[in-house]
Length: 108
Image (cartoon, rainbow, N blue to C red; front, side, top):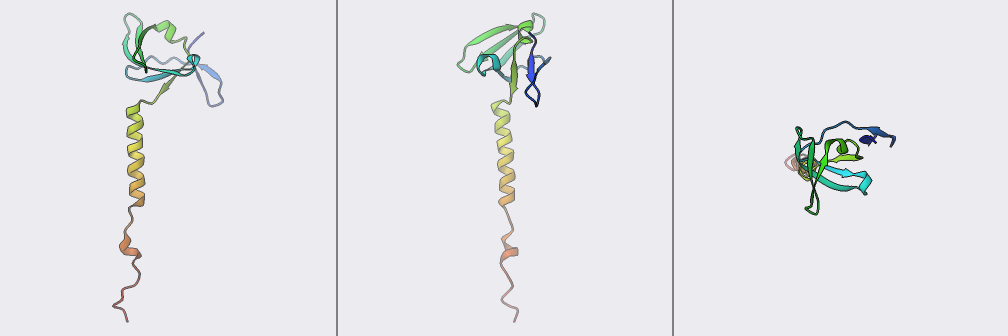
């Protein structure tokens, strides 16, 4: 069983991405249990991961490619995206009220 990802139609397709240190993944075979890759030793072919509860585990690279994983955005990336969205919204709300004051009263 190879590593798979689902395309836009939901079909399982092989995935050949190496683990990314610092990236978060969801294991679809384990009901979406998430973990972070904290080390990747290419020479030994081992990946050290840490689950949200703090427990760690080591995965063999061959096993990695057999897992049904989805790479997630990190919390830091999500926070940065939210900051950008918030600043864009603030820019849209910031309008020049001087143009909306109406005609000058000095005109008679």
